[in-house]
Length: 341
Image 1 (spheres, rainbow, N blue to C red):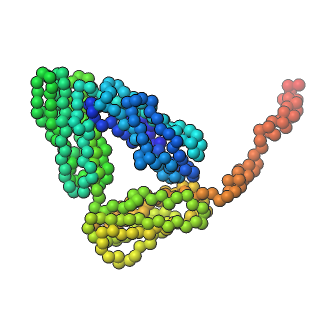
Image 2 (cartoon, rainbow, N blue to C red):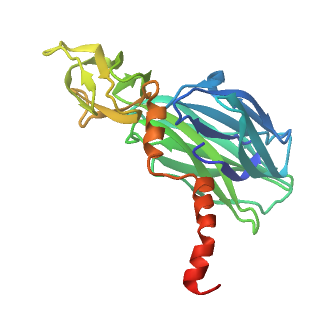
């Protein structure tokens, strides 16, 4: 697992508190998730797309979410992921937060969804507090790709309300954005409240799969795959470069301009076992620079190779019991030489 702890910080009632733990498989055998659990009823846990079997070199996303609508105050939970293959075991992670019962955010997060690169979009949420007439928002902190405007809409002895408008910048680079806005209040304690904000900025050109796993192969085995490159308007693939031993790209020269291209990928495994990390770089007519596609493969050892390696490593090594017996038999001689007898 890439990390095992996450603190949501101080959140408002009803705010979205969801975090992704990535479980990676660096082994040469598949991992199987037999079950998942949470130590607290305030937390729910699930495997994204119910991906319970993780092939070698691949990963699965375990999503933990805290219920901020039904619970308040300090909350924490331990997430248990039970494995039964290739060997029994459990991986644990921990999440925690502090839920402000007197502050409400509607909706619980800012979700821009999928937006084409170069487009700008604005979302609005409502932040309110009950019980204090003097409560107020001082400022809103955000990342470089968001612009925030906050305005008071209501104030009386029972409730104070603000409207928060968040704009996604048109210069935001492609990719997934999962960040937090920090709403700073005038209170002495728990004055910073986190509000999740998410966006998926689509690139001019997309590649599927974004990460290419070639599988577990035997030495000398050949693997054929393909990459799908698409865009909303026709384009030309200028160049494709494969960085890695045994990796070859099949590309038709002078290909016509079209919105979808298929790139054949061929890999031939060498004799050396282990996991290989490689990169495929694609250059198109629609954007400057290249698109990088990570590629990985696991080359399995030939049958009996482990035994041969083990026998080689044993050459010249004397087991401790065999070494101890001749040493014990020589102790009287050593004592006489040292003058102890």
